[in-house]
Length: 295
Ligand code: PEP
Ligand code: MG
Image (cartoon, rainbow, N blue to C red; front, top):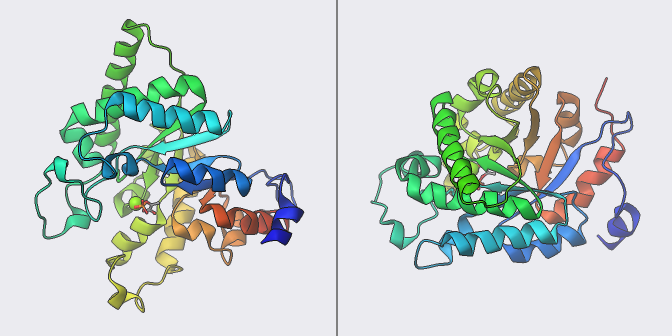
């Protein structure tokens, strides 16, 4: 690891045939930013904002969230920080949400579904995110999307938040907005969804779970869980092509993005971004720099 660090720190993420790849890192807490910097990632491709909600016994206030997002944006000093809006529910529970027990929580009331049915929770987070955007290079990403109608509803709420901030004279920047592609519906509809957003980030953890109908948390099914299943690879290619046809950049932020056996495959598929755990940044950089994306 030391060797990789000496060899590759400060080097660009460019393929042999000259394509620049955004090589970002995933984080789940502010304390992870140190590892992002140590491993020299170009940005943060997935900041799982759930921790803010899970570590508290009350809804985090706008101010608490604003401080957290601003801190990370400032620590990254102008580098991209893609913050995912609340993805609670399923395996991630906080008592004060009073979520009911569900038979199929992975397919239940979670993530954007909570945000769209309880818009006051969503608006608090969005206000904090837009306020923080004045202090760095923030982008926003929405989880568990299945339809264009959801994106339309999100946009309405975002417009409300922005016009309230404007009225109140609060500074914010224009931010890139994208969606996670982590349901088969989103992958299949990606040509349509691409018209509405700036980027796609493929969440292969959930996309694999829902496509193969295999619970990602059930160890008994490990022998059936084929992360390289051709259905997943085909979907990734489709999502990349559909995104590009409408001018979206496309990345992967699920675990598969860090699978160095597939780095060259992803590059040949046309991937623009890989967001990986901090410790995988340099191994993936090494492969990007010795691979071609064409031919
Ligand atoms: C995914 O589903 O691939 C993903 C990145 O999100 P999470 O692992 O947080 O569900
Ligand atoms: Mg997911």
